[in-house]
Length: 365
Length: 208
Image (cartoon, rainbow over all chains, first blue to last red; front, top):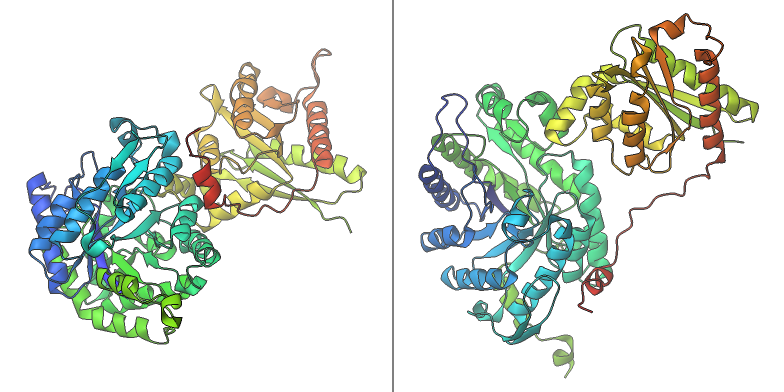
């Protein structure tokens, strides 16, 4: 089981002081947070991709490359990489390069994006969102696996004799997660390829994500990748902790009430009752996170959102220290009664090992 | 054993008591009577949007309904027939009424018989039913009954002028139309979440 954090990269005024960080401050805060994630023992740092203010991370592999140079173990990922509006050729190149620089500590999560105008800004049509996700990924998948690609599709210039460079590290492409908030087509796509499926699990009640994840698990088995329980599932989550529950609620409330996404709507109490948001003591965070397993089955990756809504860097770093303190308990509890045949999330090392495994025919020979 | 027909009446009236609610009740009763003549038992559920006003606003902000609103949305989606009644505000349906139908899934009412009705202080706003309400439900692909009922304040005490049907006769006609549409509707097939197999999604994208 992997634990990590994912960031949206929003530049939001701190509602308690009215101060808005500069883009530069926010970008350096994000990298500081990533280094802290490794320091406290987390496994994964993932950044969003956005192409409009108030968000800063437009160039994820640039940022992740910087972080890669200053970390040893941290897996660098995205939440999400826009498969609809990025050129799949450039995704193939950028992430293969990052793989080499990071010694394989790279995977990525593909998504369609949630900002309508990004499609026209990048020359695409939002009504083609799902077809773009399907065709672009089909090409990306080939570019990483075939040295020379001839290709023709609907949305991109054809390729004749094209080789994407550098080739993936050790000939093994980065593991891919497909993120979706509402589309069964994307769960189906993840299942077809035997890739991971990530449910954002932040803004909506769990029942919604239970339907998508059970569809993904069922189709993963249908396509012969393993049992439904062996499908590779990641979940988001959102936490704010203080030693005493009431201190957490008091401190987080102004950030909640003014948060760009859900602020000025339901109360903090309603929202925590109806969604996975947890604001409370470390024990409350442990309990609510462990319950995810009851709702969604044993899963492979848990990412928390900890740095949005204008929370100051100092507070976020404190949150990460506390997350580091409860990590051993989370690891131990999630490992308890976990069936032996439920795999861990794939890593570069495990994918290389799987590639080098003798196939069944070789063994019998 | 005939399973009961479910009629759901959505009232966007704001006062208590409200003439919008009164009209919704009358219409539900008229439909119930016609269905009962055909031997169909009827269950009527009335949804008062006033009680859901904050939940509806929260849904607009967060993208998901709280538990009570979710129950109301499920009732609307599962109804055999819908009666939708709004007061006319600023020449159209009220903002609360529209906000509720903004959070109803766009496919939830496809094929559902709907009776539209409105209330107002003066009969001069009656065409709001035709230029606002009917297009809204056409967009939602509902089957809207031909008679839409508008009740101005004066209608509650009027006896008609010999040329215009009185409110009770319009209610009876509209309720009858809704009942006939509901009665004629085949039982809905169990809707499974259909996923297009991935090969088909890929094949659809192959260049000619």
